[in-house]
Image (cartoon, rainbow, N blue to C red):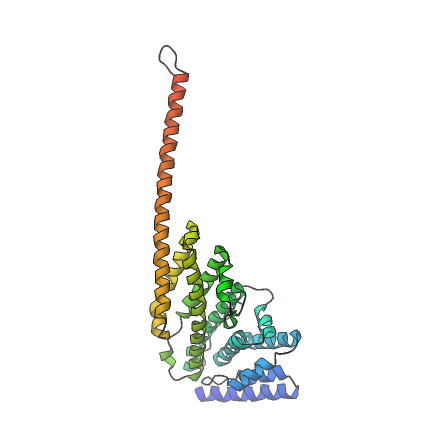
Length: 325
């Protein structure tokens, strides 16, 4: 069954590429070559570079490339094709030209979460396709969250501004917390990666693992910049902001074991996260104590005022008989 599936995939690839060549559709041809039905081999560097270069030039050209890519991604029921389309999208995020990235960032024009619509993807023609289906669902969600985070940050993570520390220092606490929360969500989803041991030796899966590992290195740098900025702002955070920061840092720290095991680096990073979490937690505890004291004082003073009003009322309206009116 597997050999027959592979043969049918090869025939489909040849037919589609021949049709695109006859119609002189450069973007379509380069996309088809980069997203073949081979379940074991990732797209080559040459094919990805050709696809990226086909989107250079005018906005209309870039828009056409993104549209063709997304149509193939959402129109296929083959797990290998879907994964290779997602790899192409990932390369646009990290290596694409500005105009190509811009067109990707505004797609779809209606917006919304899960717009890749692959959360229920299933391909069960054989055991390999079935295993790859879980990788399609996970990697699609990773790409979606990556794009969402890039929109919130205002730049693509792979193209972080050189003066990022200065840029972060100019953000309000609310904006910085929003960006940080999105980054933590991105890390949390990386931790939900399927087990690659169940499909060991598959170069297509290995390529995805390597791409996400590269993402983590960049994400780690951005998170470090933001956590360091929070460290400088601890005394300026409001109580609610400090509580939100502690929650985000706890969520991030819960990813430590998984990330350390799979990414095998980042001791200083996790030390910084723990340090800021502990300091912020201490400030929250102190502030909470102050708030509780203020509440108790307020209750006591309110009780005293109530008693005083009762006594004043009693003195003011007491008749000679001793009865209160």
